[in-house]
Image 1 (cartoon, protein in one colour):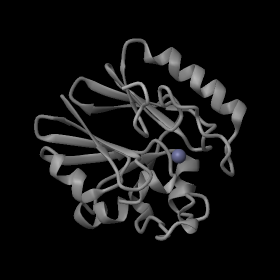
Image 2 (tube, helix red, strand yellow):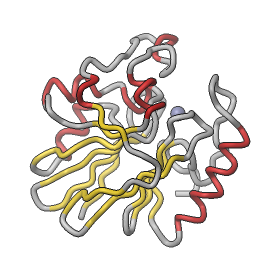
Image 3 (cartoon, helix red, strand yellow):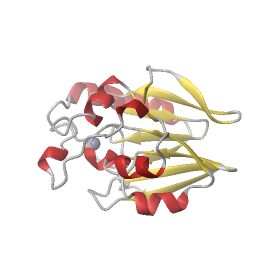
Image 4 (tube, protein in one colour):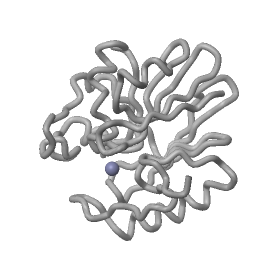
Length: 191
Ligand SMILES: [Zn+2]
């Protein structure tokens, strides 16, 4: 399995490609022109860490290329994908709303599914930075979005952020790291 990182042009958010054999998954979606060349074979889906615009702004471009690709998030994430106010893009130069809500797949807290044969991912809700934050946990990797960026204080001053929830989510994530490689939503200051 190969995990590739793109540090995007908008706010240095990170998108990832997880590939094995002739299949790939993405975590978050920024600069599509830089992400797509990293895909190996068929794109199976996008795992969203949260629906702030710097993590989702490439999705309409991606779906123009891959119209059927499912996007996995939770109920709050769905709301963010469909509201330029909630995802904050309204206050940026390019407002973003997902064109194809039919591609959204809702995941419950603790839900697992297979990314590849014998390699599953589990969705863990980690609200606080935003209500819809999801941390994605695999056997050897953990994709934390903006809920936990090693060496960086979690941002909780945004509208809809919750400082106490963010702190308990961060504790939960730390307990799940357990030797796994952390792939955060922005570059870690510890690397
Ligand atoms: Zn964020």
